[in-house]
Image (cartoon, rainbow, N blue to C red):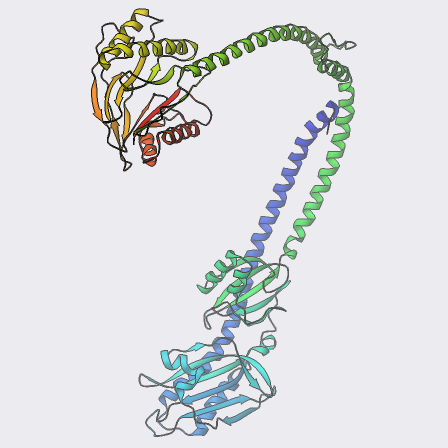
Length: 632
């Protein structure tokens, strides 16, 4: 969308002011939110801890009755069934939460010769009447599921939530079991059973404004249900996993450790966004949980946000009106300048700004525009001439590259006893690197790789001269060292701008694999055997060719085994630079060649040049030339 300068001025001033207002309101709202949330968190945790302590005290009172009965039984020397019933009746009467009390004793528990006992006293109705009931069938304590914990460990404790059939229906219970000792041996167990369905009646004093309360066991299972639609068969751990809420899982683990905390959750225990606070109940090992709706917390924050937005909008409208009025008066002359710019953009370099006579910055701008148009016309003419000249040079460079490429062998020898391949990639249009191969009259293969000092056109021209000289001297020389010496003298005598060439040249006898070489200041190469092992190949045997007169060159001899491959290259390979200006280096090159073990000479050249191009990422710094010879 195109905006006029008038609106840009308005927006340039109005938007920063809007941002300032917005930041101020955001900071204010954030402070209100943080303070409100902190206060709520402290209040909810304090309230939860208070309720947890009161509820836990009630369960502790119930548990003490069972502990007292179990202790009394441990010290009774003589007793009757009526005595036992009286103790159980006392447990039921001790607290209105107690629904029933059970006593199970082993046979001959205290040496009295009695059979196993299983007695129960149950609250009959809300009026508090107590019914005695003798469990008829004999019970082996090892088969009594609800007595297994105390009998096995000798420790008292609360069970989790379970259901029992009562009067044609089913009631949810949790029980406290206290072991009965005879000396150090557990001989029985006393339990008190609490009806969970009556919790609402017994804990009607619990008030959680904007929420509800629950009691959870250590497994995160709800003992006392807090909301509709949440089954007691599902633990909060499984709910947290289903909702993919690791924060809830962490809070539940914190709860298992007996700590107090708060966590925010969506649709957990109750619909909507909640703050869930939990506090331990040490007597039972459970946790008291309060779920509070978050909407009550944010009511004040929302009102403050609405007030801040109203102030921001009102102030912004006033500022925009004043800005628009002022910008209109300022930008009228700019409209004329814009018209002149449009004409200039259409290509009319003779256009000028007229009708702007103000002596302020806009007037200065109009005068500067007129001067700029005149200067632009002059520069455009000069640029047109320069572009034509540059295009001519570029065209000549492309032709030079084509000529140079034609000097390099386009085809390689086809022989069953060896493979030869080479590539040349210039850093510019033309290169100073080159390779060559040809046969002598006796069938000897001559191959070479060379790097001319410098780059560009001078190096390319010197390369052509050096190639011609090397072919000429090799044709009539008695030895390779003599041929290189003759080439050195010829090139040094020419003295072309103090240029020289590093050279690796070899005579190769295909039938025997015998290889004679001279390395004139050129980087030695590498030798790959059939197993893919890589080791250095060759050593420098003389100075660069064409550098100094009367230089001597030593000749070395190697024999290639079947499957051996020698790889020669110019310094543009190991000195290729990546974006971080780090060289490709001999270490990377050695590892790369090891990967090509057994590959053909052509594939070796292809793999290395592709990896170099990838490493340089399209920004070559030097010519790259590579030659590979493999004996079959």
